[in-house]
Image (tube, rainbow, N blue to C red; front, side):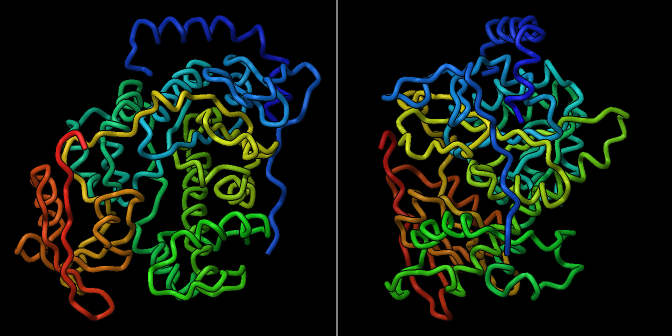
Length: 423
């Protein structure tokens, strides 16, 4: 899809690209069966990268084809209805790349809407007020419940949010509450009454290739104590895991579809989705669900850390990837202490219900598991969300934080060990 548009736009957008480069230099802070996913079409004019390096730092490459120029990629992508920009959530260099790509797309197609995986749709009104200039950063993060719904270093994303605000670009909350996804994972989609699904319809069934892709991911996340026997595609727990992933993909695809349908500007907008790479690559996730909803003009653009194995760069990996130097792609250094969980306060459970454990986090090292209920922290009962977040936020580096956790009906005690500064 991108390939067909590239040839028609080589010269037309060179001036725009030059303007973008000038802007960047002036302001360095701008830094069941599946239908086959849209695939780039090969061309003999492509410049093949060296065999020892599949993607060069600072270059765009069409997997299976070759190198393309920045203006070519942007001009072609801007002609689609949807552009999906992937990321590894804690990789700051990925977010710099996203901002650079957003700026370039906006220069070509200013009628833009930006959707974010980071926000559940219940906070949409807060996003609207932020874009309208009615909230400070502190108010925006507090009212959007950022430290509960996403709980990643906000400085990773604030440049993207400010770009939208500065240009009055509508922001859309693409996600659903974690408790809905967890419920679907545990009991299945049919167990959730229609009025409690946040408007999410049944996902399009996955392909065998998607199941094969998810299987090793699921196997890595199995909880301790389960059987070590090999997991198969027919395993009921695995299939519930697939339902959870698909519900997430479907929710974001529907929100993007709604943004296209509900735009009142009179001209077709370009909807840009900011989300994790796993929801985009090989067309398995959000692109598949968009196709099922009738949205077929999609460009999938992904960052590529050049230390990755070139075996992963199959022709349908994405429409184009951009090479990034992994040695300068530092991960986020939190501005405050972080336990590394996503949670929600549960009145019924009398504590903080752990929804997800971040890999390589303090929570993971502590032994916390999805589904745990934190009832007490540092001797204080957890009676609201802020009891947990405030205790963690004010924990001094190099100290230990005792937790009382309810797991499978039993009360256990854990100790979260916060490393000293510089560790």
